[in-house]
Length: 110
Image 1 (cartoon, rainbow, N blue to C red):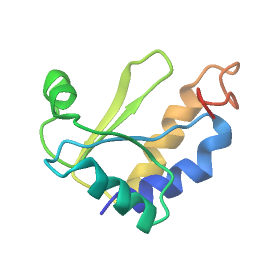
Image 2 (cartoon, rainbow, N blue to C red):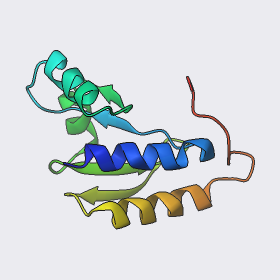
Image 3 (cartoon, helix red, strand yellow):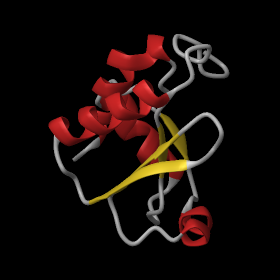
Image 4 (cartoon, rainbow, N blue to C red):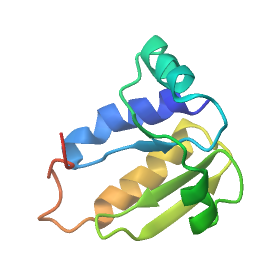
C-alpha cells in the first residue's frame, strides 16, 4: 500500500510546500477509509467519492500518483506503485521546478 509512503513524503517535504491529497475512487464507505487513516496514524488529506474526478482527468488505473504544481498543471504521472525512490525522485523534481518565491510557502490550510 502506498499511503504510508505518501504520508512519509508529505512529512519530509511539508516545509517546502508539499501537500499530499489522496483521492479515493473505491466503493468503500467514508468511515472505513477514515478509520484506516487513523489506525495507521496517517495525516493525509482524503477526497472521498473521487470516481467522477478520476474519470474526468483520465486516471488509467489505481493506484495512480499525480504530481501537480501550484498552477494546477499535472507535471508527472505514475501508474502503479513504483516505491519510495520513485515517489521521492519525482517530488524532488517538482519542488526544484517551483519558483523561488513559492519554495517554503505553506500549503493552504496548513
